[in-house]
Length: 359
Image 1 (spheres, one colour):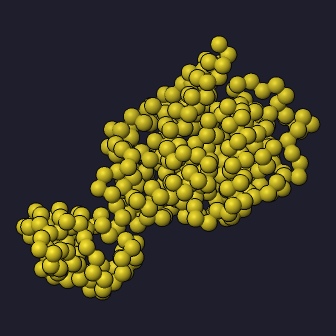
Image 2 (cartoon, one colour):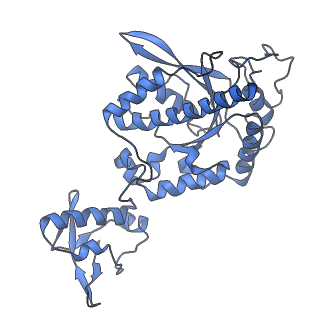
Image 3 (cartoon, one colour):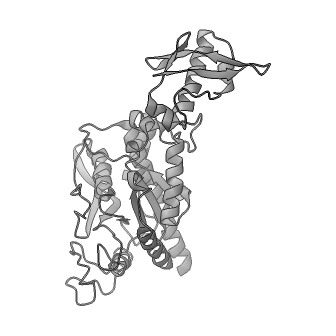
């Protein structure tokens, strides 16, 4: 398909500049070849005359042409010039994040581990996130948490995964525990119920308990923890939602999240959001994960996730879980580790709040 690019000269006359896409850049002098999906993604249509950034009016030298092409790519593919969140994508920073997580110790001396509970609809990527984080510290892609792919919850039990790291070929436990449970659904009798969720957070539910919406957790439940200590409780709740479904979650699911948020807040537990599968909703992120915070469309999705979860977008972080990959990727690791670091910051807020409350 040919697409003629029009700009405007200083005297107000329309001037046509014909360009072509060659490899990853553009050169002046030929007609621009643009895929239809690229045009629609930018809100354009074929054979339309749409003004482009003013930089295209400048010199036709090779250097200026290269800069103009970067501007054009940004224009068509919905990328911002500067990221809306700053991230250091270097391997050094990735290694620093790994060390920070592996060496983390709770500020509350009575607690040896920070317990983080992941909640979300079936298939949102809770178990996959746990496996992805463990993969980073294992040095290879693993599936430590059982991962399903259907719309029904694969996880049925309360499973706590201590993230383990390796030093001199010796496996060492970290102070981070990620808790996996069955998915939440609409309605009181499907998926993980509000009653059982709060029982988990309060520390009453024993490890390995199999959930059944028709049989709520109570004192008669086998292994029920009658007097939970701070070590048994959940110190941060993470809501996991799928970016590919962010426009399709129902009002009923929004109500479910709203009820959870209200009751969990009453317990004094801080909450954050995790937006998964971000590489599947934006071609630029699929091509290069470091574009994640330059994508306008993803920025809009995080805003929508904030509405769904009834929380500020600043509390929501995007991630790409390992799924079909066999090898680790430094940039993907950085995004995952940044999410873990984000969670631990809220864990520490919980410890600080509870310490101050007891003083």
